[in-house]
Image (cartoon, rainbow, N blue to C red; front, side, top):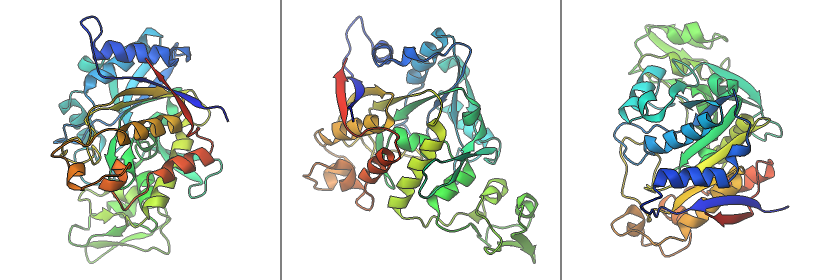
Length: 368
């Protein structure tokens, strides 16, 4: 198999070339302009950052990508799906407030924000996963599947469950609805935290299988009837319905890959990773720790597997930042992500993605 091309530029600037201009140059050299954007709805999948976290990508990067697409005649929008956990992005209203708070407004980015799985995270589409080992039909946010073209703009950093978070994590987990996220995280079915339940009956109304029942003003879920769709999680006003979160990290990573395949199969897609502020954990945290390595640069490719592998290799080749979590690990090896999160193996993601035909782990790095 021929090596995939991954294009790279560092974060150095000149008086005539700033970071945004370098990103535009990268997109052109990497061939993003070869996509026919004219009149096409173009989803730009991004993580808006949990309020309190400051490691997320600045909206200026998004504006650069949006401007590039609009110059090609495309109709761009920024998008993400609601989170499974309780926080600032668990429903569309809070999610949009968080996006605006972190600077992702139409005035700063040049396009609108659309939360892809709707108000409560239940507006999804079941998409077949060809060759899926663990997932046969992925639950993807409807607006993402309605788009003609799919672009990712990802902050490349560490992640406690997947080793690192890059393009594949941004797509697979990020594009899953709340029910889809439950499927990836859980080997079982949701349960009700009785202490938080107020017996409102919203779960019973949404359940199509009569699995949720309210007895003595407290809800419970009959797992013999439950099919694990996760819609009860989305409608509960008190977050009393909880996912099992009992899936192994290796299987979680493989499910994320299979969700990624569901999203990008059969339509134009292109991917950008920004490797700066490489925090040890996900931007879903309401805080971020010191970067574990120096800023590396910006990467782009049509191949999401090669892109993530190139970024992982680049990070692992960096010196360790003093006074970071990685420095405290007394780590002297060549796997920075494994040192921070030893309970997970990020190579599983790369291997499974290559197996499913999402791309090639062998790459040629083209420096711009």
